[in-house]
Amino acid sequence: YWNERSHVVIGIEMIRTDRIVKAPAKDVNLFRFAVANIVQELTEQLSIDCHYIDLFSNYSAVIVHLPMDAGEETDRLLYRLGEQIIRHVRNFLNISLYIGIGKRKPKVEAIADSTEEAFQAILSKHTAPVAGVHLYRYADAEESGKQARPISLRSVKFYQQLAESVKLFQESNAKAI
Image 1 (cartoon, rainbow, N blue to C red):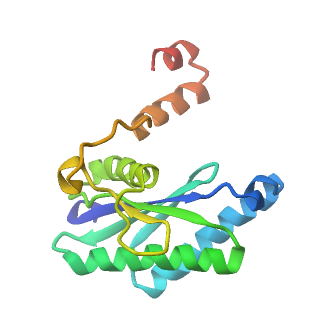
Image 2 (cartoon, one colour; image 1 turned 120 degrees about the vertical axis):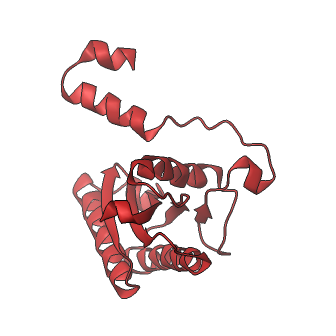
């Protein structure tokens, strides 16, 4: 099924405001759970085929599965979803979010690349398709008309390998990565 679809990742970062920083860990976990529920409700309302993934700390992602022939209307739908997530989380939880949207990928193997693009969009904050909200889409150097800035982030694959090495107590492998 996934091989017959294209995929785009929406990266979500809870902004570390006083409400988040001063909250006990159990409350932060409840906030994360509530954000997941809001995303699920909104994606069901908009009939968006997706999977929500809780990453770590204040980060999560939504992998959206699209028809291969999805056009510009899909981009507008993703912007609308991002805007609604931000507004609902702010209204119901009094929490602010950054949302980044990666590029659409035709192969399931490229989901990690879309994930990196989504979080780079949040980091760079260059292309905001909806005024007044912290919603950003990834734009490479050619598309943005600017020279791409070096990003100080490591790839998702890097962190996956590092986490696996730490989890398996492979100190020498972790140091090599």
